[in-house]
Image 1 (cartoon, rainbow, N blue to C red):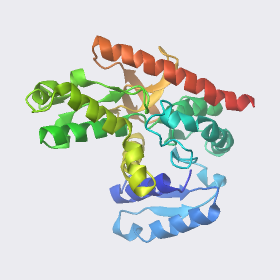
Image 2: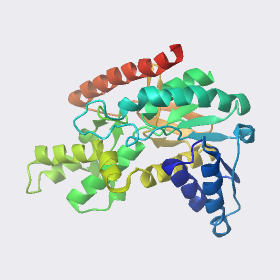
Image 3: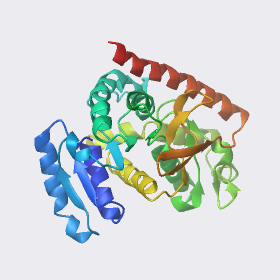
Image 4: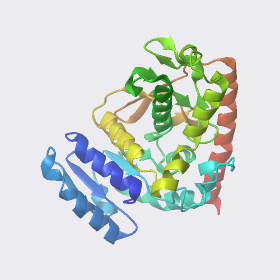
Length: 311
């Protein structure tokens, strides 16, 4: 759902990964855009395992296993690109909740058994809204997986190692209240903070710089290209694959967590049907307190999303 920058990047990544799905249907409010993107993507399909890419309408979702929802305003269009604004992408809630209030019931009417993956910003409160609209728990959002990858990249840059050798996670909100788990970040089993202590810059300054780079990464990307799309497109394709293959991959994606009564990112087991289990990762006292603040922010955001249904 949605053939804009993120939707198109997701489809391209699905094609490139290949072999996980046989049919991809693009649906967009602007049918001509969906037609154009689908036509463009089709010309790449001969280079991948058999997959059909086409545009369509809601009826074409009949039998869909996974529906990826990217519809709505992005941060640039929604005026959420001010680094000094504590709301960040939460500023998009009202506008995108209205989009979801229209889209989700139509999807569920045609594909009642599909897993629904929320990508639109802000993804976590919109996933809460989607869960309410869909009437089931096969709903999750991309959560803080992209933030965790960015954490690994920035740590690797500072420590001059490969990002794949860095283990680091972000939990809570995909947004300004997100929590970077510095206490468990490591490189080959060595605590990342111990390694940063060997760098010439003060560790506290390095931490602050990295946190700012991650919290405002979307804004930096938008300032250069107009839309954050490629990284989240690859992430979305990976998550679709995890669901379709029932991988039971442990990833920081967001789902409804009953102990907190809200959707947020923790250690989540992703496979058939969506998120199957959620675990609380190890964290120190300061990180735990920060997570509680993130939960409070997410609860307020979820209430704002639900308020749209009462308008």
